[in-house]
Amino acid sequence: MKKGNPKLSIVILNYNTCDLLFDCLSSLKKVKNEADFEVIVVDNASSDKSVSIVQKEFPEVILVKNEKNLGFAAGNNRAKDKVRGKYVLFLNSDTVVYPNAIKETVKYLDENKEVGVISCKLVLPNGELDKDTRRSFITPWIGLIHLVLRLDRLFPKSPIFGRYWYGYISENEIHEVDALQGAFFMTRKKILDDVGWFDEDYFLDGEDIDLSWRIKEKGWKLVYYPKVKILHLKGVSKGKLVSDRRRKVNLGEKIKIRSQGVKSMEVFYRKRLWQKYPLLVNYLVLVGIKLVLLTRIIKTFLEWLIFDLR
Image (cartoon, rainbow, N blue to C red; front, side):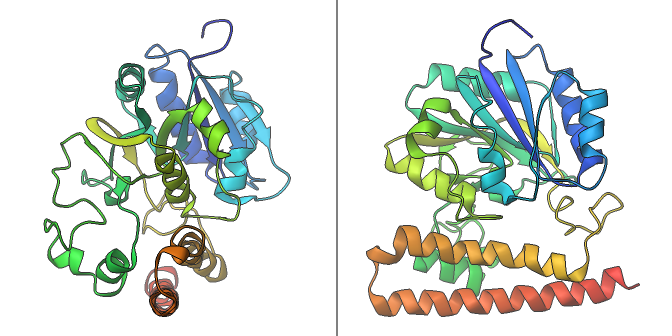
């Protein structure tokens, strides 16, 4: 890497995903000539060998060790004083970066000054698009369609029912979106400093949507750029996938992880949308969120019975 400040700072938050982290960092090593970048790993007090692996195998990586698990938002924010790049990429530890992903997204930000955030195509192990890569903000209508009635699963390409995941726009088309997933979230450091980085009221999930909201409020564009891609082993780090590589978590932790996403929905709605709708609509939304939470808890318990106890 070049001397002086790098152009890009890559921030990877880690919590007990040593094997995944090793693969992620190894993939970055293979593309080190694509851009002048530094890598910062923030470890959320892992109990596995994550810290020792970084220290031994990747001595060039800047390591930040938290004394406890601070969650996604606060954990990533601990890199704030370490970042030296003009651009900042928040990258999940459960990703593998393919060639050209870094080079082309940096180039796009260089050439499009009105763009505040960019993400590439995130593909799952089965080769399909991770639908959460590109999302619309959840208004009461979109929440009803996506979370309660789930009509976007039946009519994914409908402009009316498929709005949350942008199913009506080809996954191979470059386009502007409301929110981009935190698994690959490249932005400008000056924007992060302006909006205050991640909102630490979120512990896990929702913080990327909230950050997208605040950046978009400032007039910046958020762009989904599918000309390049990375692999996202989604759910492995949270113990959600039935996989030999998933992080082993007990039922209590699994329910906590699944619940956080729904709780984040409520935090986001109260912060960003509460003043935009009548009180009756607001309370109906809260009831819907509680029902979604109950559904997820039941589903998690059943999955635990089926997969973890067999």
